[in-house]
Length: 137
Image (cartoon, rainbow, N blue to C red; front, side, top):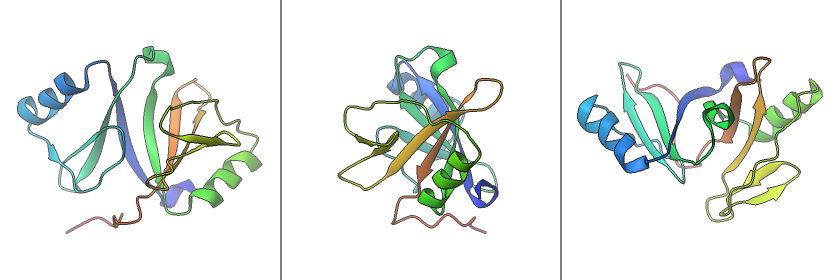
């Protein structure tokens, strides 16, 4: 299940350009080869940890805290639902909604959201097909 999936830290930004400048120019992160649509992915650290910045007007309480990058998205969604975890209603204009799963028609990327017991929003996203998720040496 999710224990085998990569975790990506997800940071909501009201001003994506300002956040990108801060993380790249101030903190020294570099753009990642691992990409997700509708945001900016940066990396740092010895394991090339990924930080995903995305623009939103959502309040802090409604924003995604982190993202699992699924190696088998459909199986993970089935496992989440089998544990009586409710997927959230999320709408992104560029994506199609199918049974509370968003699908990017252009890239094929799938995503859904749910909450942990504390109310933190967690995202599950399918892995981009052209990116290998194994750590690099």
